[in-house]
Length: 178
Image (tube, rainbow, N blue to C red; front, side, top):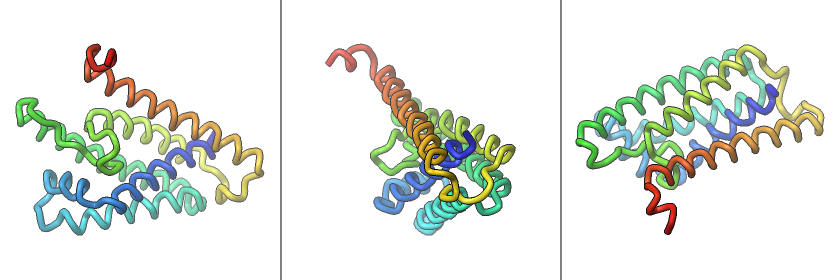
């Protein structure tokens, strides 16, 4: 189970990083709502690189407890930013939600959904710190790695389904019928 936890965390961080690097502008726009404008562009490069480093360290099994704790710290920082986005969105009297663009412009940009995701990922990071995988994931047997990948893929699919259902519920029954 620990290997599945590592895979979920690593894939999530890597996917977020790649999305931000492929199309930086949506993430830069989000950062402009959070930091001074001159810091937005440099941070839009630094954050995804740090996410990739954490994903790689998780998979490589480098200092697993420390890396899991660093993932937890990163998630806490991301969650604070999401809380600020929610507050900024609320200040617009519900006229618009400032998207997080955590997974690029194509992802669900709702800060509330992202906070739930971060809470679940934080629980996984705690589990990874308490029960670390010994060594790199590629050192696991093929069957253990296949089992972990199956569990991780199932968890990621369940999350995507939950997000889609939540988005449909927000749009209301009229949107679901069309």
